[in-house]
Image (cartoon, rainbow over the protein chains, first blue to last red):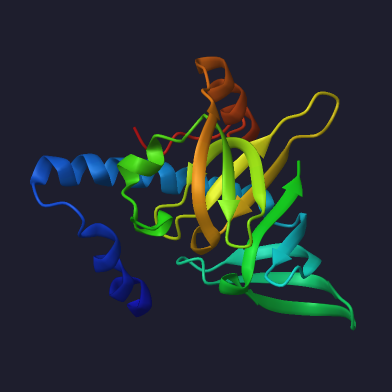
Length: 100
Length: 96
């Protein structure tokens, strides 16, 4: 996506020489693959989201965008009732957790 | 002092497989073993395996992390255990 291309330079321009680049790229792909596997494992599970200001909500995790800015969730339990579908902004979030 | 999210993949990789304590913006702390740090968002994935309990996974968003300290070093055995949680036997290996 154009947004991802726009974000790329800020995340890969930290080193200069070729072999260092390759090593860094290998590390990035290894770390990223593990993160994507975590998201796969989280899919369709009941997840607890800890937001700022001590707000804690539960929902079923659906998907994340590539740059981890928004999470798509279902059946979000809010103090005002259950929201069938919702997007949570990751910037409002401290952490999220689930059991296997 | 570099922020956690501005660190290099080499720096993040040093925490993988070790038991750490992650401090976040409002001084909350989380403990667990690092499975990975997402190189895009700097989010830390922690796994806690307690006896007689199901393993739990916590993703701490990179922007909220202020400090990460290693508590105990991991071993090959802990690495293998953690992989078995995330990568079932039938998982196809997609990268070398």
